[in-house]
Every structure is written in C-alpha cells, then in structure tokens.
Image (cartoon, rainbow, N blue to C red; front, side, top):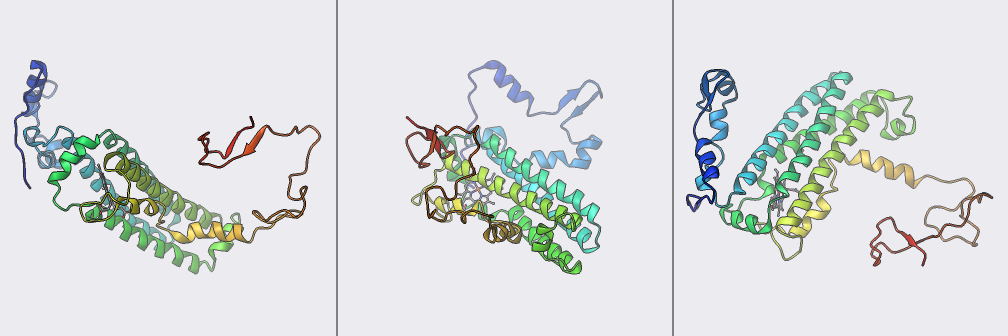
Length: 306
Ligand code: HEM
C-alpha cells in the first residue's frame, strides 16, 4: 500500500508532548510497572501489543481521521466475527432443543447488532474530504470483501435452517405459531428473537447506508472501488436474514378481513362506506392527508388544513 509518511507538525507544544508520550509505555504508579510494553498479564492474554500494532502509527496516517477509519473497521470485523461464532452456539442449542440457551444467545446477537449499528455513529463524523484522501490508499478494497460479513451471513443461514427444522420437529407451521402464539409460546418467542436479530442487522445496514451517503454520496454515478454503484445499497438494507419471518406478516395481513368494511385500499362504493363509525363527541379533524413529498415535508402524511 502506498503511504505518504509525513510527520505531523503540531501547532501546540502540549499536543506534541502528548503525542510523543502516547508512543511509549506509560508508568502505572499503582502497579509500579509500565503499561504498554506488553509484559503484564492483561497485555499478554489479550495480545494488546499485536492488536495495537494493527493500526498505522500516527506518523503514517494519510489523514488523522484514518485512525478512526481503521479502528472502526477492525472493531466491526471483530463484532461480526463474534456474531458468526455465536451462531454455532445457537445452532447447537436449537438442534438439541435447548431453547433457554437459544434465547440467551439470540438476545446476545440482538445486542451485537445494536452495537455494530451504534459504532457506525462514530465514523459518521468522518468528512467526505478526509474519506476521499483515505480512499486513495484502499486499493480495490470494498465492503463485499469483509470476512466478518460473509461469516455472519453463513451463520445466519445455518441458524435459519435449524429454526425451520425445530418447527418441523414440533409439527408446527410458522402460520400456526403466529396465529396461536399462546399455544406455541416458546416457538413464538424464539421466532420473535430471530426477528429482533434480523431487524438489528437491517438497522446496521441502514446506518451503513447513511454513512455511505454522508461520505461518498448515493447515486448511480458514484461507484465503489469494485464498480458497485452506491445507489444499489439502498434496497439491500431491507434484505432480510430470515425472510419467512417477515413474509408471515404479509401473509396474515393479506388474508385479513374486517367485518362490515371494505378491504384496505379498495375504492369505497359510497362516501359513507369505509369510515370509522362516528361518535357524537368526535369533531371533524383539521388534518387532511397529503403527499409525502409535499413542500410541508411532514412525513406523517398529514398537514394542517390552511
Ligand atoms: C466511510 C466508511 C465506509 C464507506 C464509504 C463504505 C462504502 C461502501 C460501499 C460503496 C459499498 C458498496 C459495495 C462495495 O463496496 O462493493 C459498501 C458495502 C459494504 N460495506 Fe461499507 N463503507 C464504509 C464503512 C464500512 C464499515 C465500517 C463496514 C463494517 C464492516 C462496512 C461493511 C460493508 C459491507 C458488509 C458491505 C456489503 C453490504 C451489502 O452486501 O449490502 N462498510 N460499503
């Protein structure tokens, strides 16, 4: 990788002193020993010397924000690795009908997803200008080369298989579970935790989409280094890990009917048809439906009648 090694010139003597101090082991006066030399049990167990050498040294950073870029990506890889690892535990728990253990792991997966999402908030402070400098040094690197991401997808696929086999073992269709949650309480709970995991995963992808929008821009003319147009990232944010769990909602709503009213979206045959029964105390609302893209910018689909 090309590097423009330039020693940063500090405008503050204190900043320069601090920067120099951070490059060497620090004396820990409680322990009476230096930390950062890689000799303490904590450092040996966690291999902190190796870990902390995985980022460019301050003098090699192409812009100061490259540290944020590297730390965030490396940290995300570790959390994705953990999520994939936990999938093995989850598959085993489901396959052996240990549903309490499965719930515990699923809860952890949900929190890992939340963590991945929140972490992207930090890198969202990266300016497009700084990113475009870093970008020159990324070769043809792209998110589609992330090992953690592909491990996570593989892990989720295997968990999905295990879940569907569990349903088969119980002779329960997903539709049964969702139509009679109290009859299939444990299965319903597991399915909902899977859904939480998936929702968390999609929120992470949405945060990533927003990050790409802020740094690179989303447009069909803006391409990733491998030629992938950034505009194609949008629809991928809602691509689920466990499609059947989302589809079941659609299936249930599709066949839903209402006593004494039209099907949602059907054109009323008479002006009174389809209105909620009026109550004497209900006064006509001053709100009217409007187009989402209207100048009012109100996303609820309503605006005040002028
Ligand atoms: C400034 C920061 C970032 C930018 C500008 C960026 C940009 C992009 C772009 C343009 C893509 C489109 C596909 C491609 O690259 O070929 C992509 C995909 C991807 N990126 Fe990033 N990314 C950033 C940070 C991250 C981080 C921190 C991660 C965490 C591992 C990540 C993971 C991914 C993944 C997994 C994909 C594939 C998504 C999918 O299949 O839908 N990216 N990224």
